[in-house]
Image 1 (cartoon, one colour):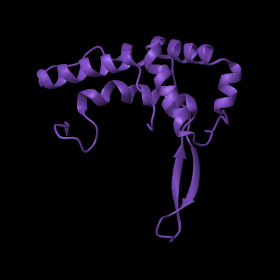
Image 2 (image 1 turned 180 degrees about the horizontal axis):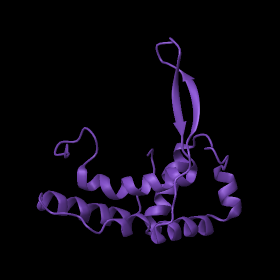
Image 3 (image 1 turned 90 degrees about the vertical axis):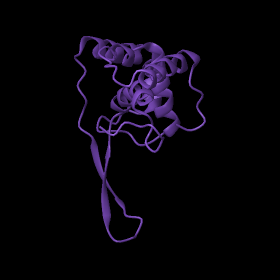
Image 4 (image 1 turned 30 degrees about the vertical axis):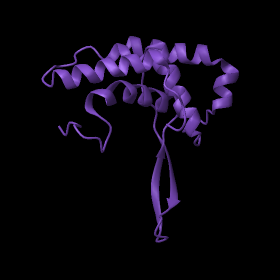
Length: 141
């Protein structure tokens, strides 16, 4: 996620989730969904997606369109859909890019910015519990 600084409120949430997961390995997290649509989490998730830039998804919406529409309004609408459990991800745009070996093409799916933001918000909440890939102590199932 680049050089982006995680906001203190998100860091505090992640630290608490990590400490609980490591301190009580058998603990079951039953109430995480409400953390995904927190304003600070969604705002940081959006910033992470914007920092990665990337192509538009199937809806052709770009960051400039979202900001012209109003970032607060856009994030508020996404949060409301997540809260009401009416959020539906869109189909990913499929493109083909050259393989590193130079032998043909490989498919690449590009989700919409809305879907990337929701996915990143979920990652921000879940990763402290399960650990980042490659880190010691990560749960494997």
